[in-house]
Length: 113
Length: 114
Image 1: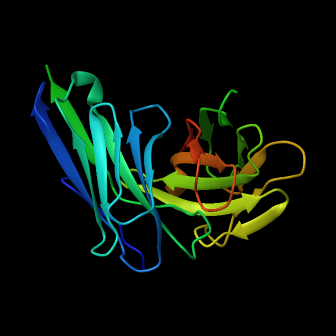
Image 2 (image 1 turned 90 degrees about the vertical axis):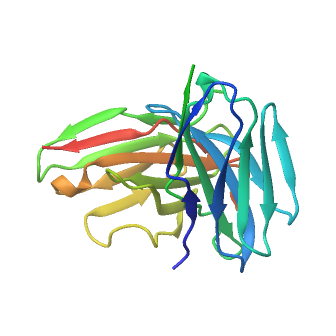
């Protein structure tokens, strides 16, 4: 059974704090690792798709790293803002999965002004 | 480009009725995926379709659930004889190519079975 684990489950920070979350995934048959941002009542919004070991991606104040050999990815948010409050999902695609995403449970981030 | 369109946004059905959920993929996308989020759970894969073909239905319950993606028109997820345990949010995603690149999600259909 393919398992994707995210930690922490929830996080409460103050505006301006920097934060990071972890996603653990199977290290064998790796194809891609996806990060999504999901606000209540909206559709998950793609942040990054990462495929290469050592990959680092950045979008504004949000960045992500990937280690496929040990099976983990970190998502970093620098200087959190209240509008960053959302659930952050990671999802794994195996090279024999045909595009099917295996999601973690998500990290719920709350940023207080 | 209107993105992935799902309708209805909310659907209420009585036990034993049928539920039909529709998903129109992004223009040019021929790969469609359905996911389900049960209460207090994460998103779980149900089925992957490519125009007129079911590619992977390993996440779909064996009974009462079916999916199609006809040559013309939206993809349909059909649940027959709904039960309370089918109450969930059902999300559809589409992509341009196999492999999960350019995955775009719809806003979901929230099914409530009363």
